[in-house]
Length: 300
Image (cartoon, rainbow, N blue to C red):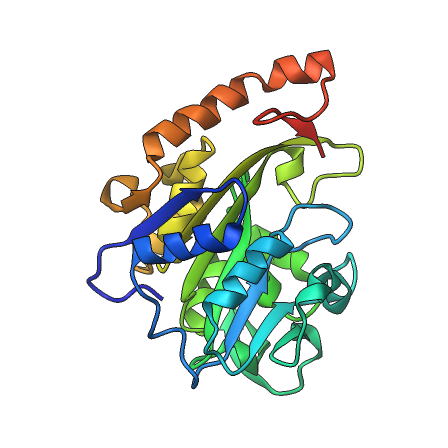
């Protein structure tokens, strides 16, 4: 969770090779995380994976870089819950090569050690690994989805599979969840690929198609709302028109105003121009039915 009174800082780095080294650089840009990386505090990494049969989730390389940045943590949980697409444990197998005695998959829907919290006027039992002193990391992909990524990821903390009932009161549910667990301590937007169109929407129907491009960008920060806002602006969304960001600011949970966020690392303006340039070629690529190419859109 962002330290009160501190300037919200978001690091953007581009990579073309070793993600680990670039992740270390991003951490240096936002400042040390020594208070998060300790021998006393377990870490819960809430991965965002709605459907394990798609590729709309953080890569193994990025999750591994996050794990390695918490090298002092006594235990690291990769966490997900059940949904109507299947068991959380099944979706977590995406990262099975990273599992060790210290790094373990954790299905939030199967935990019997829970605590009751109030989410959108409902009493929900949340897993014990979500609460402080545990560190919570939220990671998801860069996408043009107006409901968000880092914050939308919190819906997956609700253990039962029938989460769709919260969609009509989504902002309330997400931010009640944020407050109930004491906030997100560290946020990572994985822009290895950027997803646009229906491919950015996890609830798109089977006949819907979307596009992605290999962008090799990482956004990291300790203010999750700021990371969400910078990521949204980068892909062409307007954070001021995203209800979840505006409601988070109303609750004083973080900074969503781009003008008030310190963006470090790769130039935001130059990178944004690059993203806009690529987006304008999307229709041409779709018309010509081209295959994937560097900074060119591919069907997902």
